[in-house]
Amino acid sequence: MQAPPDYVDPDYANPGAAAPPKPADESARAQAASLGDLALDTSEYVRAWSALLASETRLAGASMLRLIGGLLVVPALALVICTAVDAFLITLLQHWVGDWSVCIGIVLCIDLACLYGLLLAIRAWWRDMSLPRSRAALMQLFGKAT
Image (cartoon, rainbow, N blue to C red):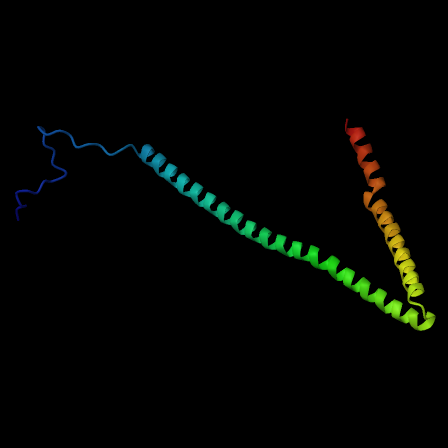
């Protein structure tokens, strides 16, 4: 069986023809492939970090709205509770004393005493939270380090 006339045997060397072009060096191919892989990995890495940043930003926005809502609701709720307790005390004292102005004055004195007690508690908590012994120990540690 004979091959068709346009068939060229790849193993046949024609001495008069130019040599076929050599394939690119294997190390150059590997370097190009690794550079391509690096580019793909880098783009995937950037895309993942961008998606993470976007989701964290959405979460922070939602948390900020909840925090602002809480900052508005909690003081209003405390004021309503305080006013309701004051009104209840005034009506209870009015039943016993009989004079509204005296009852309002007594409740006002009770409110001022509660405010003074809260300020003293905050002052004590502030002193406890400042941790003077821990601060002194830290300064002593830094003094030894230098």
